[in-house]
Amino acid sequence: MILVAGSANLDFVVRAHHIPGPGETVMGQEFKTYPGGKGANQAVACARAGGVATHMLLALGQDAYAEPLQASLRDANVQIHRIDCTNQPTGCAFICVADNAENAITVAPGANLCLQANHLPDLTGFTHLLMQLEIPISTVTAYAQAARAQGIKVVLNAAPAQPLPAPLLDALDLLIVNEGELSTLVEHPGNVASNLRQLAVPGVVVTLGHRGCAARLDNDYFVQPAFDIEALDTTGAGDTFCGGLVAALSRGLAPQEALRQASAAAALACTRNGAQSSVPNSSAVDTFLLSQGEFASSRRQALYDYCGLPSPTDR
Image 1 (cartoon, helix red, strand yellow):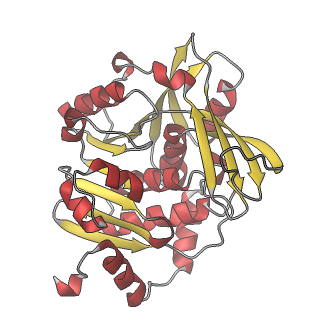
Image 2: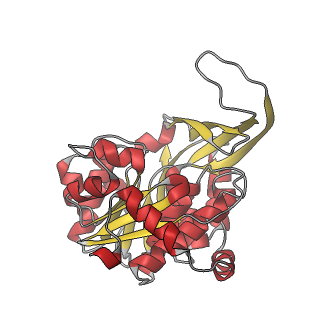
């Protein structure tokens, strides 16, 4: 059973031909609202794509924006632990999605900043705690230390990027970052392999966009090339990856298979609009994987080379 502690935002999404630059106004196309927020997205992914019993601790404002967020979590069978924030509105995000499926996001955290250390529920029965950085980092640190003290695996998706205090790093079992976030966390940025080695955390997974992902788990290294899909909207794909990965690990899957499952879930999420609305169910992930053959050895070797990692045959 997984506990996700983190953010929930209502996403205001506009599609446009391209993402506007500084001072530029562009004419948008369609406008929709979707349930989002890194924490809520990852909770939905754990439950729906990963098929694992999932709870979520979140803070919401006392406004109309809170209800669609709760409804989406309930629809995914996520059990909610709600903290009411009386002096802040429910978190919101403003997202522009371009025709090439890339996006630009601005978050107004609102009630997400109300989560405090004393809000952590009883951790009995949980195997993993999954968090992000859209709630106060002091709260993230307190939750991580409490979970570590009870023998629960602590997973942090260190996004949005910011420096991580040593007490938080010391309490982590697994850190999930994208390539840019990984570079900001190391003292001497280099290639992916060098950056993975510099972090004093038992496990680090780095997502590499269209290339795929790589991981260092203790002293073992893994790569997973990305699946070929026609991307429509990349919003929430990284969160789907995080939730799918933690769910797969909680089910006892080997690291390589867990990375494969998470990558498949994220690939499917890119073919649909929205964040939580794009998260596939576990049967869709299984069907997709059955349709995919093994990657050509040249693609896997290209990813090893990009990361600066020796392939298994060279070790």
